[in-house]
Image 1: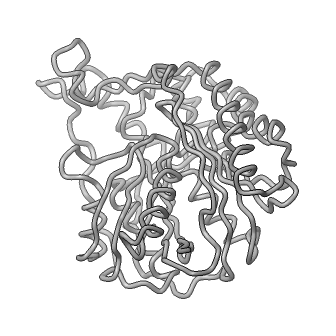
Image 2 (image 1 turned 180 degrees about the vertical axis):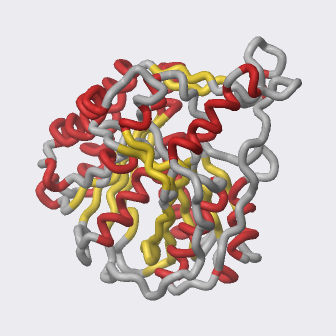
Length: 376
């Protein structure tokens, strides 16, 4: 049987940090209010595009795996943050990397996009369609956040991370996946203003109006992540005691704690990054994975559980068996351009553009950022 080993990993975190105190300068909130409800202290705000974040993360993952971009078979760009509808964002990463032989797919299942992408690429390797893949989780939520809505503005951040999968005869990589969607409640998490449904129907195309029913999402997230975790462990014949690490979607500290309790996993086995990065949607699991590797929390042969939950309402749980290598084979010289603004300054530029007086004559959001050049 073929397996899809994770042989490379890399992240790309924007340098600008938005603190809870920064948010309190334009929202009726405080550090105590945000921390007590979410566990979040800060998050990142990007000065470059999502494609640039994804490209740097992918370049670092490829260098870690020792794989030349020209030999990549597939790039999966997982997330909800796209530069435009056509062309897709994965092709932008492909072009920037020089992965001339690669197929390129955008995959949007919201916060579960990276995990769904990991499952998809694994299946394609196992069936012989491809030999390797780059799977990216990336978000640039700061550009379309409704910064006047305290319910969502305090939660989300920007970031990216990627992994490389390669065919292997050794049992490793994703050993089991449970994926699903609680579509009955899909309207509890929605961003209005993007898509064909808003052309001339009362919401200006390009507006960012968020629907977010926190209570309903909390209950459904805990139930779906916990039950799918229990099922994937049972399907693979692995007990909770045999787990070495849980890398959950970082939506909210209380959700993470509730899922761990429900699944019978002690918190010392759970990696938590929500206090530093907030909810980066599709990027939370891969960013936490890279951090777990860099801090030595993943050992050769580790059993890793990855539960996630997102808009749709999609959910999943993956069981991953780590291989022998936990250190990179190489490093990439690709870097982001310098950031000359604070996170608060970047956010205030978006807020100005969301004001009715900051809109173009057609009602669309006027461009705020130009494409920055990635340095090699």
